[in-house]
Structures are given as C-alpha cells and as structure tokens.
Length: 264
Ligand SMILES: Nc1ncnc2c1ncn2[C@@H]1O[C@H](COP(=O)(O)OP(=O)(O)O)[C@@H](O)[C@H]1O
Ligand SMILES: Cc1ncc(COP(=O)(O)O)c(C=O)c1O
Ligand SMILES: [Mg+2]
Image 1 (tube, protein in one colour):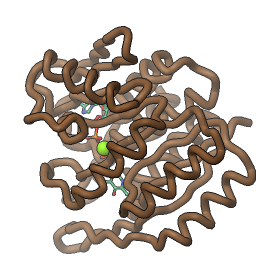
Image 2 (spheres, rainbow, N blue to C red; image 1 turned 180 degrees about the vertical axis):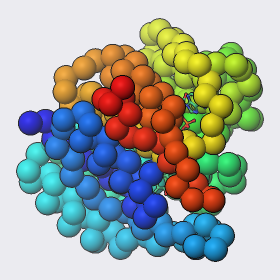
Image 3 (spheres, rainbow, N blue to C red; image 1 turned 30 degrees about the horizontal axis):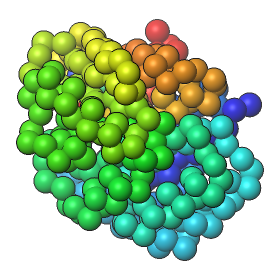
Image 4 (tube, rainbow, N blue to C red; image 1 turned 90 degrees about the horizontal axis):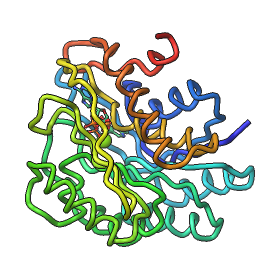
C-alpha cells in the first residue's frame, strides 16, 4: 500500500484541509497520514473562520511519527506560521522526499487579501524550490510570481515561468471559476511544455475544498507512480466530478463530494 502525508490545517466543516485530503487519499487507495498545522472552526451564526495555529514543536512530533514510517508522496496545505514552513522545508530536505505537492494556500475562496504576507514570502523562498509541483489558484500565482492580478492565458504563462524560475519543478495554475473564460482552465508547465487543461465550467457555488481535493488527488497519483503530467491530468477529472456533485451543507457552505469520481 502506498503511503502519503498531508501537512495541512483541519477544516472542522469537513470539506477542505486535512479532511479533504484524507477522503481523497482513501478514494485513491493510498494510506494517508496527517500532521496538523492549524485548526479552523466556524462561528455557527456567521461562519466567520477562526484559525488556531498549532505549536511548531507539536507539528514536528507529528512529522517525526509519520516520517519514521516512511511515505511515497506528500502535500502541504494551510501552514499557519513561518516556523511551520521552515520546519516543513527542513524535513523534506532531511528525508530526501522527492514527490512533493505544494498547495500554497493563502486565502479561503472569495477573499483576496493575504492574512499573513510573511507566510507567502517563506513559501516562495523555502518551499517552491522543493516542489515537484505547486498548485496555486490565480490569486496565489500572482502573489508567488509577484505580478498584478492575472487575467489572460499569456499572463498565466508568464506567472508559470516565474514560478518555475523560483525553483518549482513544475506548476499548475488553477484558473477554475475565477478565470474569465467559459471553460474551467488550468495551465500546467514543467519548464518545457505548457499544457492547457480544460473542462466545462460548472455553474455551482458548492466548491468548498476543490483546491485541496485537486492537490490531494495529484499527491495520490504520484504515490501510485504516475508522471507529474499524468497525475495532474487525472486529478482534474477527479475534482471535476467532485465539484459536479458538490452539495449544500448549510446556509453558508457547500463542499465538493470527494467520492463522486469513483461513484460515477
Ligand atoms: N466551477 C468550476 N467548474 C469546473 N471546474 C472547476 C470549477 N471551479 C474550480 N474548478 C477546478 O477545480 C480545481 C480547483 O480549483 P479552484 O477551486 O480554483 O482552487 P482553490 O480551491 O484552491 O481556489 C481546478 O482544477 C479548477 O479548474
Ligand atoms: C484548513 C483549510 N485548508 C485549506 C483551505 C482552502 O480550501 P480550498 O480547497 O477551497 O482552497 C481551507 C478553506 O476553508 C481550510 O479551512
Ligand atoms: Mg486552495
């Protein structure tokens, strides 16, 4: 059985973060292990997010547990603090982990203000050089590449080039719902070729956790031995089905249906 690690935050509502990762790992028949970096809870009346960072020493104990077992691939998600980013980078190097998906989570959907800009700098400098593939959405790509908001495919390509120049082996920029296009377009780039991944854009707002699910699917596929391009291409189909079957959880949020691809 292939084994995966997610270093990410807990989303109590179950759609994103560690919860999305574990559900997605299970659907790919890989054994998932977790190092929790922060805990997100929501106010029942307003769904305002309350984020508590976990002490870095406790994150290290979790990572040491998991890395003593050994893993075939890993991903990162919400990281909470510069200390945790530094720790993650140190462990990836010490253990020579070479299938690493960096999902550079900066904001939750609908927001475009980075709460912790120092985390962005640390991810750019410490984690991108260790990434087999990084999966920014449009906003995160512009922040990593230090560009103005991205609006065209040419600007996506420019950002992808910059992110690879920063040291990531490859990148997939998620145009998703935000990109002004009638398709949901993602751009893959590995320093050699640009590949445009295209799917029908689903008219739904029940897409909470789509980014985490996409990155976890890529991680699973890498653990199972796929090339990066294959892993990303299959993950796009997986998350498309998950969004298609997204559902209303309450008046505030609708998560993707992580099991939809296999059920279809
Ligand atoms: N409405 C949609 N229809 C089809 N695919 C979508 C839609 N929204 C997002 N996606 C796809 O889901 C994946 C996750 O993207 P996105 O939701 O933009 O990430 P994030 O949650 O990190 O902001 C990408 O492959 C993106 O293209
Ligand atoms: C713990 C955690 N990680 C990551 C995210 C980002 O989720 P998405 O997959 O929608 O980008 C969220 C959003 O609420 C979260 O709570
Ligand atoms: Mg995301």
